[in-house]
Image 1 (tube, rainbow, N blue to C red):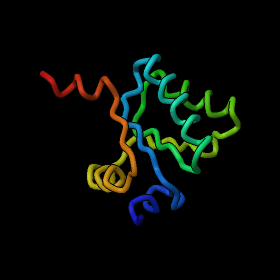
Image 2 (cartoon, one colour; image 1 turned 135 degrees about the horizontal axis):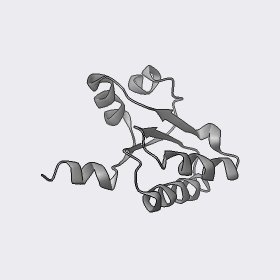
Image 3 (cartoon, rainbow, N blue to C red; image 1 turned 90 degrees about the horizontal axis):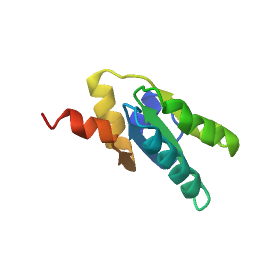
Length: 103
């Protein structure tokens, strides 16, 4: 899709995980799930946002030699962020992002 091209992504099925990546357990689960998905199909993972444990996902991918399938996007202007989320095949919200809107 065109939105993937805006952030330099290939035309592959795309999983977008939305940060903040502040929960180590969630980051480790996300990395393990992505690697499991890669065993059955070719896909890519976009980590949208920042956080102390974003690197845990990247390390897991590197340990399995699939780090080229992980793309880091620190931040996008709102319309590009919306376009990227709309172009994703799967969106994985951060547990912290859900709590932020609960107030």
